[in-house]
Image 1 (tube, rainbow, N blue to C red):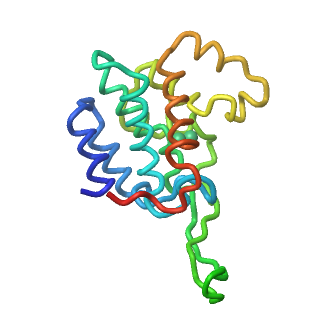
Image 2 (cartoon, rainbow, N blue to C red):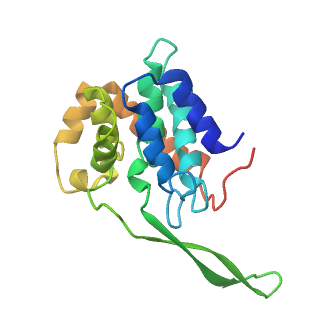
Image 3 (spheres, protein in one colour):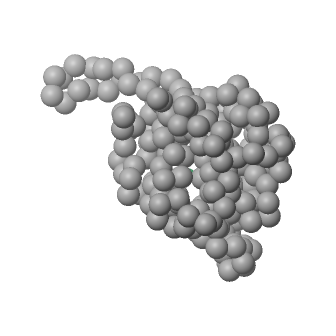
Length: 194
Ligand SMILES: [Fe+2]
Ligand SMILES: [Fe+2]
């Protein structure tokens, strides 16, 4: 099974909400399942984004949540937190010299071409809500999943600390995103094949 299959299987098992089929159909029409997770940091390779989303799910579910927590919310928040990056990266190639062989080789190169410049977490919420309603807790968690890296938070916005105070899921999603990005995927320029 590939990463897309794992992603779809989690939705089929846990998410039973109006609009979910339409949301997944739309996602399939984008480059989400082949896109990288970043241009040159973690997961800067084909399928990096879906690989990262699945890692966030694993960390959120296994490290920060309990069996009795709402599994539907865990799947929605982790697997959809970065859908703002669908149709966001442009793939081209660049030539780099292989240090061992001395030969020039063509490797993938990603740049940003945002189809919908709406922000980051807030854009993911907007895109999901086009098809499927989120609970307030889910929307707040996805909106603030970047923590102190969020542009509004960096600009001094106080709402993030109020959000973390009121919604534990928002804190957990941010910590799971950090752990997946900086611990599991550190330096990954290719995804781990199963
Ligand atoms: Fe993100
Ligand atoms: Fe993320």
